[in-house]
Length: 339
Ligand code: ATP
Image (tube, rainbow, N blue to C red; front, side, top):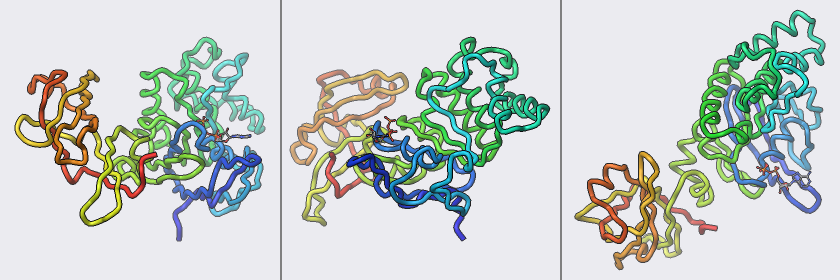
């Protein structure tokens, strides 16, 4: 028996001649938090809209809890949804905004108030119940939008870039809050984002998309440490690429290593010159030009992240020569070229 709760099965979507989604299949388990991650225009919002029933696929199926829902209207799917733009009614208070959907579903009057207050408590905003959206911060408005979505006791939750309009500090706080609420309610959640940090910190499972296709599905650790191709390696985190040949193969391969996996040394490794030093708070990002002629890396620029104390210890300055080492076990090989 499969433990798949929401099945996205060979979905295609064309807008005229344009292919927005090409053969997308994803299995989502109950209670899982899944992030659809990819650059602008890769099709993630279109996929979310198809899951919601706001858009019909050109081919393929959406199966929810064993039932084929592909052509069911949104109202039959019992999901909650939160958008980037909050979409609250400006002329209604926080409480009234949440009550609105409950009233529309014809809940008894007493239950409407009870459920709305319960949802407000969940996002910890009871004290703002009589405030209007214009009297609240962006983060508070988005928490009200989340409460509104959850008040209807949905079977699953769809989040479309919910944090994109907020500033960095609030975004970080809300990441944690959303995840805590999601775990508490044990609600299957699909979130669209183009922010790799958001996906890495929040998701149980990340679906990396590009050009209408799924590039990789995996845990944050899997997509970070064992990227399926150069696109994933480059889209999630920072990485250095170079071309080379391995003795075992005759064809050219792409090799890659993350900046934090490279070490610097005064005594051994590849000779390299410091070309740039960038302060990043707890770490520095250094750019080296490789001067060792015996390697495929000769002449390449290599990014290396080092702890601040190392910069001081080695007295690193622009123009100085030092050695860098690339641990073999941290080097990733790809058949594909970097595009
Ligand atoms: P973003 O992060 O910018 O919203 P996205 O990954 O969510 O990007 P989609 O909104 O799903 O991307 O759009 C995918 C592609 O399909 C885009 O090239 C877009 O222009 C196109 N597209 C989306 N909706 C329509 C439509 N109704 N008619 C024609 N083309 C569309």
